[in-house]
Length: 296
Image (cartoon, rainbow, N blue to C red; front, side, top):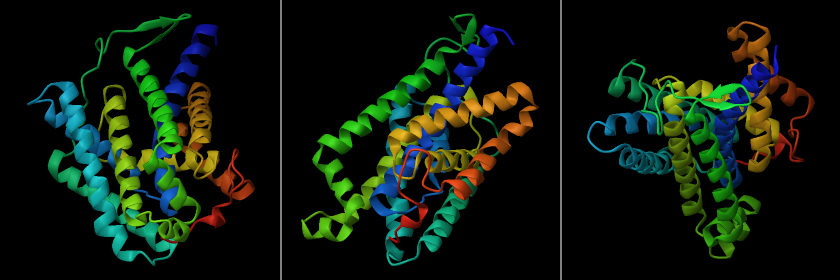
């Protein structure tokens, strides 16, 4: 394997890892505010991408993406209001089962609306044959969009949670819901907002990766598993660590593909998840243990 091939694999791993990191950040946003593990997060990505594909037939691409993100954000809020808020005293296990059920419901709805066809958004810049040369390796311009949007999302969320009033209120709910309520914070609204924010970020990610990976109604569950693995690997609730964990998982997958058949790539995330849960359930970069999961 020459240096150009190594760089090619590394760039592929970084791209894939960035996608996983965004999904993991969606998990962490909801977990930090509510303690809930939302396994419908992968479906938000696919809904956003599918919605944008349909809207591009009637409006320009930027408008279609914007509308798709807004619609998916509203969908995230509806999921919380209809399915989560009604069972506020439920156990963590019950909430996990509910989010799994919601993911199945959304997936079946997408099947009826968009059928089984594979769809994709057009490349934001260039075409499917356009490439950029990096030290002998060749990447699509869309990869730069994926990396750039990932960086913007992470930076934006960091600033949002540290310097805005709403972001600080969401962090307060994560630390102590009762104390936040006593301080006048509407914790119910913060929970709804966390679902909306998570869904909106997922929709943006789905639109950005659609030209590269293409989009099908049943792609949400595998993405949710990868994102959950990254969230656990980095430490639940630690979005900054999720970036590093996503890159680790992405590089591990492309390393597996370079040495073995591509089919083995799907086993990497499961093996990593099992190893982390058994030997370091708090994650590589966090101190909190999975036992700290709180009921909503």
